[in-house]
Length: 88
Image (cartoon, rainbow, N blue to C red; front, side, top):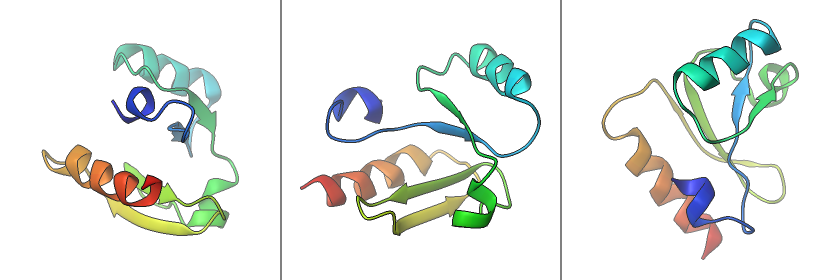
């Protein structure tokens, strides 16, 4: 997982943009996620996260470097490629 591979170099987090913190934590447990789940109340306005799941890679300056909406077999690979590009 990216958060393990790049520990200390980047932060990976799931961001809950809707519902309650309790519901987000329940989903984290059910899906056996090992990344933290952050409150994404302000994410909608800041990064335009209006659909889920939405994957966003944000650079050190806070600029969106890559985004992807939806999920498929290729999602993890695509995110990894973008992260590797940023941490070179």
